[in-house]
Length: 315
Image (cartoon, rainbow, N blue to C red):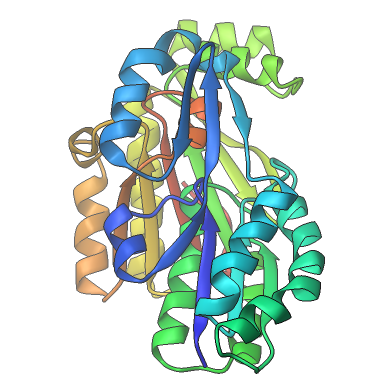
């Protein structure tokens, strides 16, 4: 059976990996004033957009995912021909309408695919499963990588589906913003009051950074640490302990960074995590953060995703 995998462009995985494993993208378009870029995970284009537009006015950005009609058209015109079963994995519906759009489109897709598929010479059924990853950014990558592994092992779709739906509940995403004033401006622009003026001002004055945690669609702070570098070190060493203790449900850790990856690799704690992954057979994926991620969390933000049933934080 030909199994396809689809993610939205907020899913932080390297473009080379997406291309190598034929993972299809639902791009999210970012508009800042008159500047518009559809995020196709192109690192050079993203960095240029970051440098030219994001730093000053990124908090005002509008993000637009594929509409229901665009998702339907992509599947009916291409994916329903190229594959027999497709898993579409999206950013958590608590933070974006991508899941709802894809889910609504799935009904039209399953009604409309037969004539197109038949004309292409395929008379067998086409199936589609839309899965809310219940997470965002780097943590979305954990589920996508597992889907790739299971497809390569030629596991049947029901087994892949059950595994992915179990995994999303145990996937944990972590975020460390570098600029709390930017984060406050962005959340206010979105109508989200989760970062107050007082906490942002005090945090900036005292150089205290929050560690934000996402699991099962819920996001909130789990720690406050003085200096960005110290917060990054605690998070990366926390992940290294999970790896070293064999506490991961999948041999995958995903990292993304809102800037050049050389800066990510220079962070304290990075080498500890990299070495732990090498010693325990865990793949460490590193990517430039998506435009959606940088727009919402800010330039220089760090994101990490892994799957475990252990405590969410012991930093």
